[in-house]
Image 1 (spheres, rainbow, N blue to C red):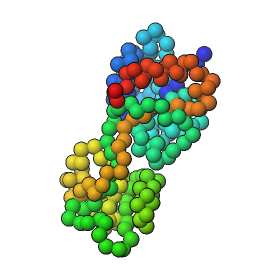
Image 2: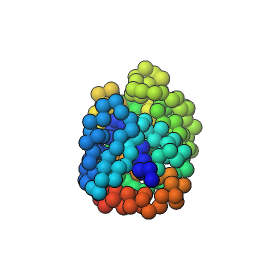
Image 3: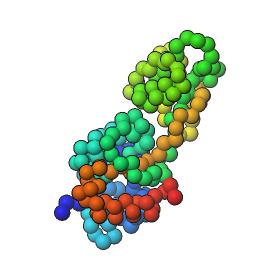
Image 4: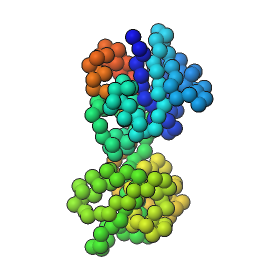
Length: 214
């Protein structure tokens, strides 16, 4: 039978994933020395292989949704933005940050009656947040360096992920309001959970016993 396949978000969540697998007793040597490879084996203590697929966050959700990967490790930010028909199984406790609304330091974002403009990489999260407040806000999607938007006069504020807040401060921005906490989550394909129930449940149990959220 083919090994369990798990899609892992490249970059920010890789280090935490390797630490989790190490704690589970997995041999992660191939993953640590991956080179340019994107599909790599890790080995359980009883020498069973698990295939790790390294992918961008949004693609992790796509691969799990379509069943080409049984499981995925992805940030709550991506889940909140893209959603999908999968099980959100476990908060893994690493990759912690938060969604915030931030604006230039000496401004009052909520003052006045004019419609506000907000720049973000996460339009769905932003729309949900402002709809919850009953505010009519114009959302502009940008792909990188969101902090530039208010500095250039493109927007009144931004919605973005923040870890320490240092980048905001260095660009003259302040947190106006926290939107939601974010961390790495384990997700599972619904059909795979039924077809490979015992294998996947065994894997999930090991994750739950070693998840850094505990």
